[in-house]
Length: 307
Ligand code: AMP
Image (cartoon, rainbow, N blue to C red; front, side):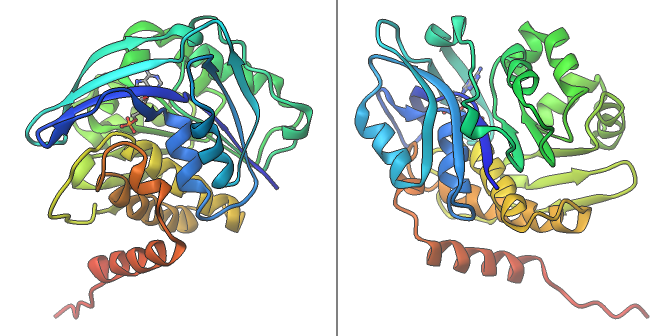
């Protein structure tokens, strides 16, 4: 059963304290697909690019078993472009430019072969487009995960609130959780956000790990302490890719299995930040993934005798 991924396929320009890149391949769906492909081999992509997007990048997705029948190519238009600059802490960044280009008129079409998917990952995208994908599905997937960001909260909050009613899991970062809920305490924020529709909430806290909530329980996964973080771009999407990839491969949507999925997402994100853009994820082997997941288990496991 397939994993349907919707989100941006993009050009990014990134500046970190370690260097600067010109236009490189990025986009939420790109990172999600590359990451999920380490766990699941039926990944279908719905997105849009312009005529300026290189075939080599589409080939890279194919090499990672990501099907691109649902990737529209608008020959006379330009690909979505995002540029960001990271602060010295590498946890916070400023968006310098967002050029929607092809996204402005994007009308997503879910190909017939992509119907009846097991899991739908609505990557960061205009909320009305996320909703349009939901409306096209003939059967509700077993799990619907939605990722979003402050840009859409600032500009399209009403549309986002509509989409949130229809999803099972929301993933956002701590700043966005505070913005969406109006609460500073992340526990209070989680309670409020869960009342908007999702049954599960994941709050990503960059190098400080991630929290998973449902209405009764909470679980915390740390981030792997890394000596060097070169470029955090795509870490959130790579996390989401590992999370949904594991769930799709195991078909177990319990809180217990979501805890494992959060650890796997964290392990995948720890690779993404080691090089600029998609470079690390493109060259990653399954052996490296397995080793790092074991490192995570060692990192969080301890025995305690209560006296
Ligand atoms: P992350 O670092 O996980 O938040 O994701 C960064 C990726 O998100 C980059 O590759 C961008 O192309 C993409 N991105 C940035 N802004 C947006 C936006 N407003 N909507 C969708 N994708 C975006």
